[in-house]
Length: 293
Image 1 (cartoon, one colour):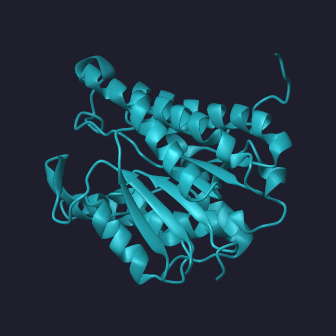
Image 2: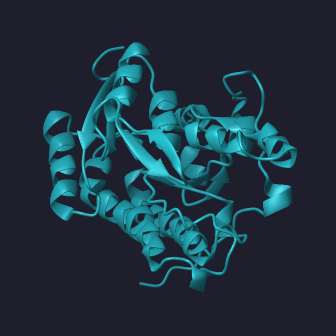
């Protein structure tokens, strides 16, 4: 792949979980993938839900290198505008373009999945809004001048069915619903510059955390996971969507990864097709096309 053909991609939350899977699944040989997160070194562990999880941008970058692309770890706290500016300056100076921007960073508090009312949970859950909504806005704001100079760029916000059903309480739902609406409105402003923006519901993903939790759950949970996607599935779907010629027809929409994969004839790594959960959990909201300045 020539320098002009290689894609410059930035994925946040790339040290573990869905973000890491997307960074590894989205790339093709010759691509340059900036992996943004807060945990750099191989061997780093983070505690979540009583579990010790591997969290390393170096591991993600090394895996991307093994796939024939170039993984570049970028340590950054996306709550800080100065560090966001450093990312923007880095992309601008080194490449002057950004083909795909994927926001998958999310702050998870141990209280999130506790089956109790919100007033019995910590108010620290508000950090989900700071990291999963505010940071997405601020980073996209900083990178917008680069995106609009790039031919047919794509912005992806990773969301979930929690935007339309009760899932983990009001903070989680508000953050996901906010992402979907923010994506819709960003798409309006980006449209004349041929930048596509969509919100993507990734569904249940078999990352390290899910697999560890499932080991201690009952058969009903195991049955629920049968339709789950591999860690890299969403990245494969995003890349397939990016390469479609008519993606601007879907700009501003909220899409379900499993359904989009079916439309694009993309299978998971094992050849199976993950399920969308639309029937059980609901589908995306259609926002009004009205515009008021």
